[in-house]
Image 1: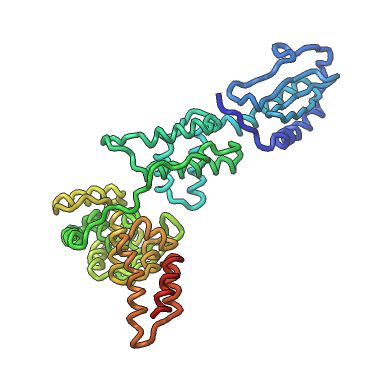
Image 2 (image 1 turned 180 degrees about the vertical axis):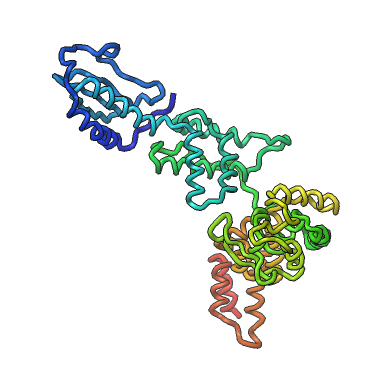
Amino acid sequence: MPSRQSVPHLAALAESVRKSHRKRRLRAKSHVSEMTTVPGDAATCEHDQTMQKSARVLGPYRNGDKWRIVMLDGDTRKALVADSYETALALRDDLKGVIKKHIARSFEESLEEYLKNLVDRGVSQDTADKVRRMLRPFLPLDEPLTAIDAERAAQMYLDETKRTKSNGEPIANDSHHLLLRRIKHFYKWAISRRYVAQNPFAEVSPIGRPKRGKQQLRIDEARKLVAVAMERAKTLDAGSTAILMQIFLGLRPTESLVRVVRDLDDEGHILWVPFGKTNNAKRRLQIPDALREVLLLHAKDKPADAPLLGPPGDRMHTRDIICYRLKLLCQQLGLPKVCPHSLRGLNATLALDAGATAQHVAAALGHASFTTTARHYADASSVANIGLRRVADLLGSRGEHGADLLQLASLLRSNLSDGELQRLREILTAS
């Protein structure tokens, strides 16, 4: 039996249904005034087993020469009066329908509505499909939304953390952390639609520490991969070219594969990314000369709306082709096994090492701020080296231009603790 939940705005719902019956009641005739009991329902509770005990409809009951319907929701009680028995039955059925719509809604029905709402709000269909594949195995699809209480929610998440994948390996902490975030967002939407009153996963906390960043190739390893991928890309191999686009441009796997010919602009010097995973994914990227020649080969003799990658007539590929090609190339070259998404991190790391600013690297990857880039993509040493270069630049410019003392002071305050700052003052005073 579903857990007890309150029907939102019960009185308002009842009033809405009552008004819809007003004209019908005015035309109805009290031809059952001689009746003293309701056949098969005398003074008993009409209870639909699919509904919650806390929200139900009682009646009809005789009320003088009229008939009374009672709605109960916990401590809330609402009575409605109908002129005839038939009108009261119709009113009762409508009220039950309203309650069932807000309480007995199944997970499967609600999940599909939620996913459609995501797409309507601008989320890509690819992302919505990923959410569907993640939530469907986790949720009891044939049960109502109110079937999960806080205790069951906690146990469901705990079971998920102990699940093993098809290859026998335990599920990664990042995976069940993401699932928890998505299920909480799903319930937040359900609450906004008044399908449930509260989120049973609200107090469930993620278990285990997340893994920050993915294994990346070293510089020499990346050079080997680029050299072989470049040769294959010249034969219009879509997977190899997508790998190069990730390394050189920092694209997401899907971003590289869904590009059409017209996205390659200015004689191959610019690649437009008009949409993506987030609003910040929309960007325009400059293409290095080595990659430009390959992309122009892919675009040759194709219409503007044709897929950019692959021979003419090829369909739009999925990210599976990158996974497949990257795995084969790493095996062939004896390189560590890395995932396609790590190539974005490699792009960020190499860009930072080459002196690019944090803001420019974040913008190139389609991030709103460098925080996401530093936490999940760029190598920690490369991020730390940004601060070291800033200090070196400030201190090294003294002889030529004079040190920017205010900027140096701001940098020290942001990187030193109160105790370290006090010790620095003592050293400067003593000297």
